[in-house]
Length: 162
Image 1 (cartoon, rainbow, N blue to C red):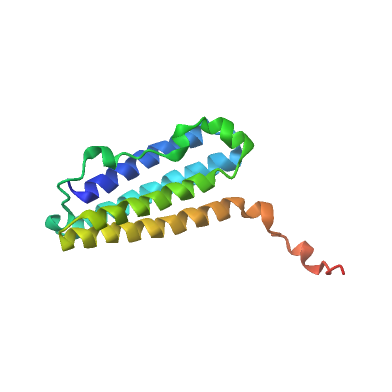
Image 2: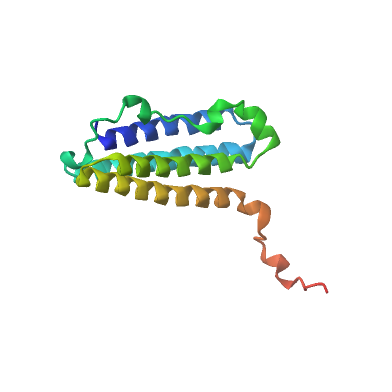
């Protein structure tokens, strides 16, 4: 199997997953967060397609990679997500764990493969996952920032209380 095909399949499934969460969510901030995450996953998907086109096919073959390994199985899917989100609006932390799992997945595959070219490709995909993790973290802070930061100059004259 081509490792890019595996990675791209995982991204396609994650896009559908976050779109579904956005549809199911009744909390506006979470709906917004999951919509942005779905778009981010689509961008990540497109970046992987571009990478696939620029790397020789022989450097991305992993003959012992079973199709089942390429399924996106989110941690959140194993629980009643909407019930959990009602009690913990910071469930985005699970999204971060998913991204960290993706990094670990590709690093573990790289450790298993004997071909140096394929190992380099897998580590390249792991690095792309790290970049995406950073994007996911920034998305969350962007969505949450109105709750924590003053955005009005009217408050600039507040004095510190001792």
